[in-house]
Length: 477
Image (cartoon, rainbow, N blue to C red; front, side, top):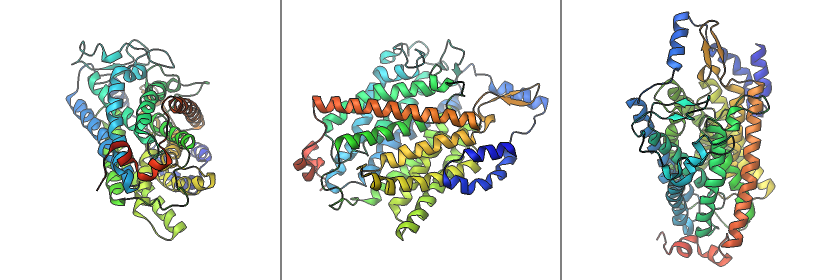
């Protein structure tokens, strides 16, 4: 009971505090004492596989395709539906172009900087231009081979690299929602390539590589728990988006002209594609077709539905009507928040995470944005930045150790791994702060450099005419 009370006291978010009374219901999910035979089986199951597994490889290939679908067409349609008609094609083009740019950038250097051993802060260039891929193309990949914290997979390195590439693609694409309607296409291309190499790859290395300092733990704390990208993807993109919209300034006519979405149906279709693709994002991060992937898929569905309902009812109470766009935005907020927790939590906590994300992201995308006066066009920070923070912190509260720990066959006790409690919560706070500061500062510097060299923003006249015709010479019709 004391452990449950300690966990509840860490839940600083008001909605979670209200629902914390439900936490005793999750006590039944505690790991039971295992019989010696079962304990031995658990230890054996934890041993790394020595050969490729066709089922795991098939699942990871499928997951890679699902995550790519999240950017094109999912995010492209979601964002395009929320801008004005004169900017629809330019918005879709941003997602499409980023997909192409980051694919090549990741192949050339991004993957090597993120996932080779290097040092605690950055990888080396041993996989520059994916060199060395021909040597073991049909062998299982070992992440961090040669160090004590190495992780054996049952898939080829090409599949692991491709899966991670789709993450590297969608993260900068998310940023584009914050500066929609006003950045030059040339500036966007240069900024995204630099950002991918100098911000995304280092943070991915810190959290997900075998040698990264956040993943290994700092200040005597456990390693940061980020199963599928709360810090690496969503907080990272969210704060970069906030910095971008502040550096570029507000859209012409913001607050005085009608900037209603051109086609909410596009946005709903895009959000639906994101929802389906997110199963590859979260369940695929198990890098295997196993029970952890199944749990990640389960909690993703639950949190997403809860967040959509929470946003919908919050909007209903605040504005008198529940909007379709609000429900879709709430679903995305739930997807964001459950992402870092998806491989670490059980269904009950997932419900709480979803409700918290829906209410808090509704507040951040409406009241907070209006109070502070920044023009985050499509609420990149309000949904991804804030939702990522909510999910990352609550992962520290609700992490379920048997997903990551090791069962001692002599004592039948779980050791190591991530487990909810004050130390893990503190580790999550550190990871969130480090990501916010690094991404914010470096994004600001890169934007300023690009502005000096080629200029960031279209002219006011071009903005009024619309980016479709000005930047691409095309119109929707």
